Structure formats: structure tokens, C-alpha cells
Length: 295
Image (cartoon, rainbow, N blue to C red; front, side, top):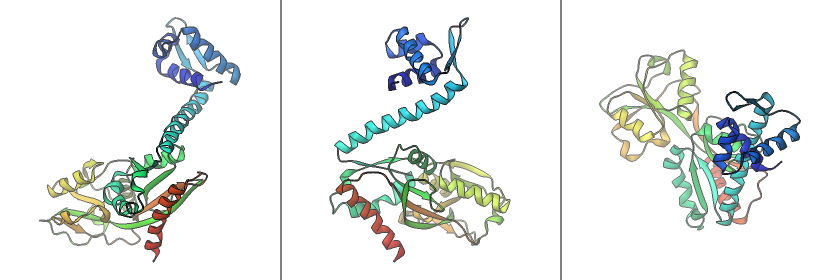
């Protein structure tokens, strides 16, 4: 079995035609047929069914199992190529959510600059859910993630770097006092899109209090969210991390609920990863934030 056979098989699931796959890869149809035969011999099962009347193919139940493995193998192979390239360039790729990239990462960057290490970092942005999935699949080795509690990922070391309260924000001409979430049943909200921690916590508070405030607008962009609140579209649900000096025209409303979750920032590192000296230096700078948090 070779990786090209798996690539052809994945394409068969998409195109449902040996001829179409052969045209895509600019090879002969027998090349695709032989690749499929090798895979079926390897697994001792038919992986596709042929509809001769329509000259199309369909993946069998056994084929579905192989397909999922093939997708994972090809992802990891592409990841290995990317990681080797980064290693050759002395680059360390760190995944992080946009809100952390915008409002928190500069704090770490200020410590990396004197050590001449900032240029060794390449950041890629994902929502927290997608970032954890990338780590789970092995597509990332390092991440900075937002969560309300320690992350449950096997083989991953984690360090809590900081934590911030969740608060409500409203236009400056509003005068809502501190409130409980339960009292907000009829309050329109501007909230984050699905896949972001803010949305997860907002929905959790809704379920815990059995109140479901109307959502006027959802966005993945924090600045868009704040501008919507400024315009009076609704109240915002946000972490204090994202409130800056230029946001003084927004009014913060604190929640009075007991045991509110916090917006916690964790640095994640794969345990089995062989590290270079400069990578260890970068990790030590991140870990110094843990010392600051606990001091």
C-alpha cells in the first residue's frame, strides 16, 4: 500500500468514477483500477461497488472505514511536510483563537523580542473548538486556547497563563445596574458565532438559568460585536480581556451570579515532541506567565 493509492481512493469517494479520478490526476484508468485492487487485496474486502448502468462507484461499509483512516493519514502526511518545512526555517507554529491573537499575544511577544525569538514563531488562527481538534488530530503541536477549565487532551501538557472575567457590555447611554443572568430573558444580545468559547458559555448560562435571551446578531469578530453594541443593537457578552482603552464609550455591566466561569488562557504543548534549544527557550517564556499568575 502507498499513499498515492489512498489519495486515489479518497478522490473516488468524491467523483464516483474511475475515469473522472484518472482525469483529475492525469493518469490512465488502469492506474486507478490497480491502486484500488491493491487496497482491496490489502484489506481483504471490497471497498467500492460499481453501478455498471451509470458507470459510477459507491464506497462500501468497509470502504468507509478505510476512507476515514485515509483522510487522517493524508492530513498527517501533509502536516509532516509543513512541520519539516517550518523546522528548516526555524519556525514554531502556534495555533490560537483570534481574540487571543488580538488582545493577549502581544504581551508574550514583548518578552520574545529581547530574546530575539519572535521571528521564530508563526501563528495560525482558529476558534477554540477547531484549535483543539487540530491538536487532537496531531495537526498542531503548540496552541494557546481559551477554556473555562483545564483541557482534556491526552498527551498534551498545559499551562494556565491568565484568566479574565466574562462581563456584559452596553452602549454608554444605557444604565443597566449589575444583574443576574436570569433577569436577562428579554434582553437582545450580540454574541460570538458558534465554535467560540463566548458562545459556549452564553449557551451554558442560558441552559443553567432556563432563560434564552433573543440573539440579535452573531459574529466571530470582537470589534464588530463591540460596534454593534455601540449602535444599540443589543447587549454584548464578552471577556474583559477584549476591552481596551479606546472602549471607554462602552459601559461594563457585571453579572451577580455565583461561580461564574472564567475566560482562562492555556498554553498547550505536545508531550512527545522533540524540542530544540530555541523552542525550549520560547516555552520557558510562556511558562514564566504561569509564575506571574500564581505569584
